[in-house]
Amino acid sequence: MEDELIKRINRRDSKAVLLHFCEVNDCWKVLKHLCFHDSDLVSWRSAWLLTELPKEDLQMLGLDVKALIDHAAGKSPSVQREVLKLLEKLFIPQDAMSSYFDWAIRAWLDISTPSGLRITALRSMVRVGKHYPELNREITEMGDEKFLDSLSPGIQAQAVKIFQNLG
Image (cartoon, rainbow, N blue to C red; front, side, top):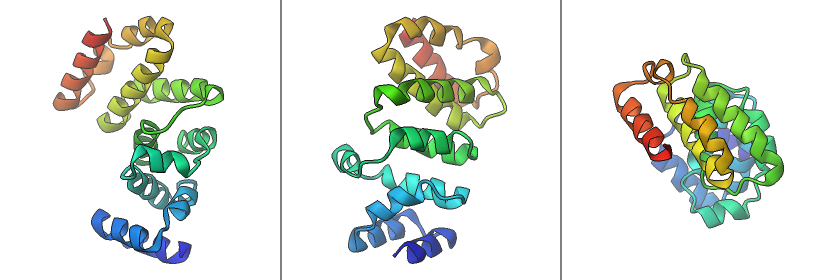
């Protein structure tokens, strides 16, 4: 099953085709494993597909959140973005919260990072700030123009709204 799924991912089957394949073959646990794959394409497409699961089903898969953060933080921007989006649907345990927040900060502060990853990282930082309000001041300070100017116009508008809602 894993080899067939990797083959389908590598040939870039559409999301609908891949989701159908996973539903028919109940390969969600295989996707969970493939999120940790060495290939960025396999890793990000696995996370991309898993984000389609309802939160409850995703929680039941028992993803190791800390290991996923550690794995994705060193991967390509596309893997990082999809894993951060996946993590939006998961409970972040206390022992992983610091790694999650630090990774999001690094992604946000790197102005060479694609806008899609940066806005997802900003949403992750705000999520942590809801649990730890004392971090909101630190997050707000990252709304400086030098960090906003490098974003695409649509994403910049989203980021400005997020910072306005924090302050």
